Image 1 (cartoon, rainbow, N blue to C red):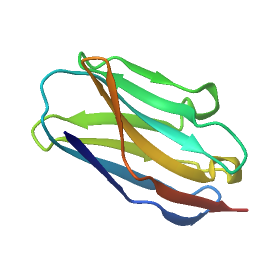
Image 2 (image 1 turned 30 degrees about the horizontal axis):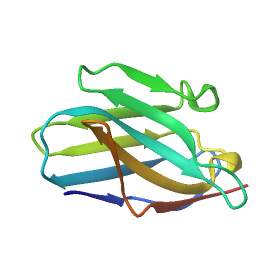
Image 3 (image 1 turned 180 degrees about the horizontal axis):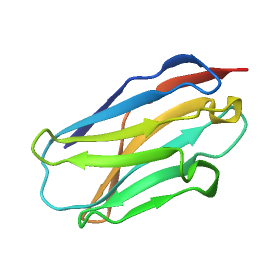
Length: 115
């Protein structure tokens, strides 16, 4: 089993910054990719940023230049640095880990950006 625990969400004013962190543990064999997803009520969960085992990153167009995903293999964490936040960044942010064809999700952390 794999466990993921997100932290770092909260309420911030537009233009501000937040750093989300995802700590993973359990049976870690060979991680393929890890990512951060955002979900708002009534909409599907969408990819915000992802990082492969080789360090290649991918971002949603809406966050390019503002968000940075990083992974610390020694600490077993994946962080999402969010700068210049906008009200449309509001949502529940989930961490996902993919290994050996299986997806594992955290419980989510709420980010609210006020205008």
